[in-house]
Image (tube, rainbow, N blue to C red):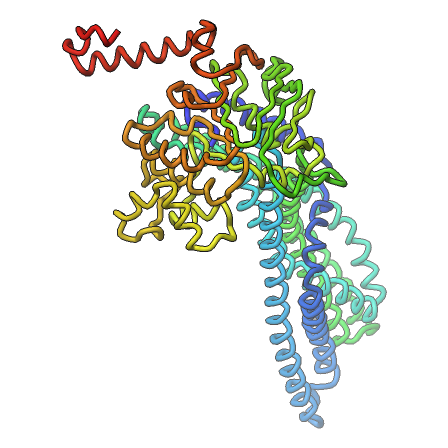
Length: 629
């Protein structure tokens, strides 16, 4: 996680505030529409059989509902005659059959539509996650991980509610409204004309309120995403929070974020409530007006009571369907906002991608690396160059150490070699091939890395090592673990390699996590090895185990080592000293010390400091020894 320091919290405060303001402006400018929901259509079409079954059930349920008023009219006009009492018995039996068809069709409609909603959301979540994992690191430099998680969870849940239950209700009521309106026209064109005249006065306010609901819902979702982003960071850095007694400050900030989300959600709810109230009043008032006109026609003898009853039932069905549609509209508007956010995420494109016709690396990997006049500046950083005309050649099987002050560009070399970024000038070659002409996955497949702070997932030790090569057998994993000295501590665990290590490997020591990372690199068996401060944070005993594992890992591989602790690079074939993004010195340890330059100064600082610490630890006797000087 990017934020482990409390000073980052203030930075993220400003960033979150800026993101929220930008989102507010964007949502204010955006024209509310349902177009974003179109991204769900291809997912639904993957399951045409279920969609067809849902439509058949929907039509059957609507037809059964629309048949009821016809039966009512027949009973009113012809069924209440003592001379033909069997007529009403027959109609009631028919009504029972219609009700049975309605019940079965409604159950099937609900099942199929809800199944489609669950399936679509599961597919969307999987696709969004897969897409996000393929985006370039530059995207994550400017996007909070908590916001991405919010889109994967809260936004997709909103879509599931709409595509599942809400879509089922919306489709049912749409069919009922269209069918009831058609039957109203068939029953009484005159009364239907009055209803049709009233419809624009009903629909237009609903559309206007729907836009407000969608805008407010989108803002509520964005605010909640900001709160989720902060919560993810704070929980991930809970030890730092507690160490600085900052729980209260973090709680206040999260409470403020949640309160802001509540206010926006309350505004959206108020808009939906007003939308529902207006819809019910307008629809009910139009039905009352039609009833009054119809009653006058019955009194005049121009319409039978059964016909009026039939028309009224169809009017009630149509008005009820329209009223429920107005309520569902708010939920659909919310889902549209969520779909828009997901669509924006899916629209992100990786800055580092495979070319249309990628070049092939040599089939036999050698591990040769060459940097040619490489210049680079981070896109989200300052305008200062991190690397400036960096050039060097690393022969296969050699060990090259990279040292220098902080900010000299050491880690950037690893980022460029892994194609997390591309250089702004110059080029990088692996086995004689420019990495920009190759699929990034092919380049990364030839590189293994042991970082300073290795990532350990909340799963078993075995699965954590398998991360280095997912298709590896258990025997291969155990062999890699033994080579990395992981077995030394695994033997003491009651569940062995099946032991769960907790989130980010919290139950393991730093040295144990490092050895798991080394086991991954051994399992991957790549020709190029990158070691980024692999032992800098370890105690002496852990470093002994890790160093022994590293030595086995480095055998026969091209190895690049970043180290601030110069004692770890004494055995390197060549040492590159970086300063200001350039190589300022180059050679082995002895020759660089003899040059009395930057490397010699760093060496004196470290070794003198180490000697002084040893003297303090061992006391006056050790200090008085002339050989100590």
